[in-house]
Length: 425
Ligand code: IK2
Image (cartoon, rainbow, N blue to C red):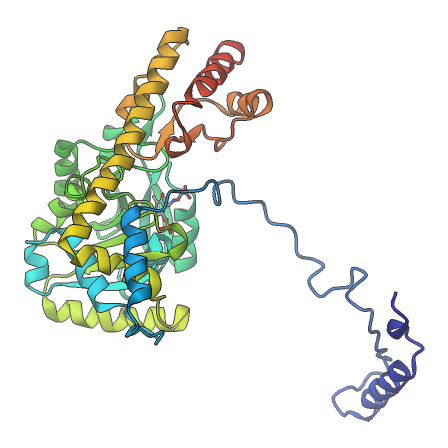
C-alpha cells in the first residue's frame, strides 16, 4: 500500500470528517449509519461490480491474419492522397455513394426495384450491425415479432435478434445423416410457421454448414414463403466469396426481389473485400413502393441515430472507391475469385488426403459444401481429441475454417481427422 493511501493521512481524516458531517447533516440520510471514506475501497474485492461473473470467451473471433487485397491498398492510397477529403461526420444513413453501389451490387445493376426507388439502403456496422438494425426496426414496426432462423446457424444470430426485441424460433436446415440440406424439414417448418413471420435466410455459403439450397429448392422456398406472406430477411456475408462470382452468390436474393415482394438484406464486406475490422456493411429494405421505402428509411434513422449516431467513413469510402471505378471493380472480382478458388482447391486437397489415407466414412460433403466453412461431421469428442493431440482448433460443432488451411497444413489436418475417426468412433 502506498503511504498516501493509508486511512490515517490528514487528507483522509478530513474526508472522513466531511463524510460523517454529511451523514448527520443531510436530511436524506436519516439513519445513524456511519459512512467511512476509504480510499482503498475497490482494490480488495468490494467493487460494486464484484458480482460480475466472467463471460466465456468467444470461440470464433480473432482467428487469423487475413490478406489485405491489393485493390483495397490501392483505394486506401487514393483516399490518403486526396487532400480534399475531410473527417466530417457522415449523414445518419451513411455514405450516399456506398449505399447506392451496395444496393446495385446485391440486387443487380438492372434491378427494377432500384430503378423504381423501392429500395432503401443504410450503411451499418458490417453484417452484424445491419442485422441488428433490421431486427430493431422490425421489432418496432412490423406486426409479427417472431423470426425463424435455421438450425444450426451462425452463433450470433439468436443473440442479435433476441436483443433486437424479436422472438427467435428455429426451422430445420441440416441433416447430419446426409451432411446436406434437410429440405423436407425446412419446408415443413416454414409451412407451419404463422403467417407473416420473419425468416432469416443465408443468401449463400451457409454458416456453419456450407450447405446451400439448389436454385430449384430456392424457388420452392420462395413460393412457399410468398404464399404464406413470410417476410424474408437475407443475411449476405459471403457474396462472391462462395462461388467466386458476385452475381451467382446473389441469385437467391434476386429471385425474391424479382417477384415484386418485400424483403430485408444485411450485407457485409468483411469477407469479400477482406475489410473485417473496418466494419463495413449495409442494410437494404426492398419495399412495394417508393413512398413506403422513404418512410421506412426515415424510421431506420431513428434506430441508428441513438445506436451509433452515424457510421464510420473510412471503410465505406474504400468500398465506394472500388465499386465506382470499372478497373478497380474488375481487379476486385479477380482477387475475390482467387480467394474463392483457393478455398475450393483446399476442399479438394483435404478430400483427396482423406481418401488417400482410407479414412472411414464418406467425405464427399467436404467438396459439396461451399464457402468458408466445412461442417466436418466430427463430434465433440473427436474435436477435443484433435485439439489435444494435434493442436488443431475448430469450433466444437466440428466446423473448420477452410480459409485458414494451406497445402502445407492439409496433410496434418488429414492425419488428425484420420486418427480421430479411427480411434474415437
Ligand atoms: N452473418 C454470417 C452468417 C456470418 O458468418 C458473419 C460473419 N461471421 O464471421 C465469422 C464467424 O463469426 O463465424 C456475419 C453475419 C457478420 O459478420 P460481420 O459483422 O463481420 O460482417
